[in-house]
Image 1 (cartoon, rainbow, N blue to C red):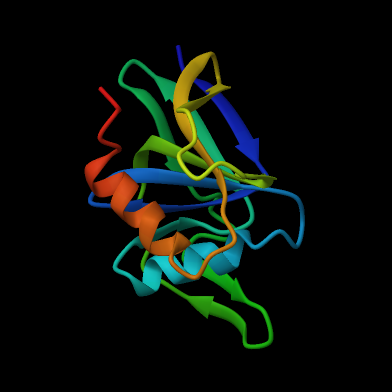
Image 2 (image 1 turned 120 degrees about the horizontal axis):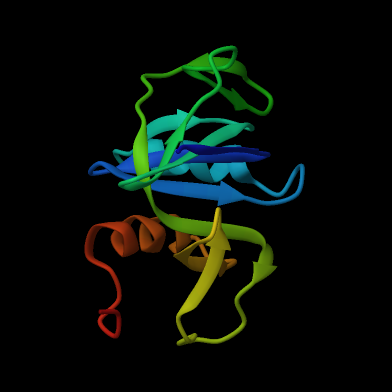
Length: 141
């Protein structure tokens, strides 16, 4: 049995691993997605992301009506290559991380526990998100 959920979120894939970027309207979801795409990620979805829970976990995809499109504020709606990917990491833009070395955070989506990181206000943050997906944290199993 497959369970489906549509979230107000953007998503990209890094080396086949899905990154779900969630946050309130105007929080920077599309901006972070564009930054990660600029660093080599591939678009999954912008603004609306479909999550499908199956036997192998949660798969991220774009609704057909917006597939292959991403909003660049002040530029317009841009076309982009798009893929689907299993959920690997959640980025929560509504929570600001204040600790220099934070504990590991988890979030529950469709009954599945997933690693979650919070927003950090530094120019290096998109690079850190990318490296987290590629290599994980040294204290993470």
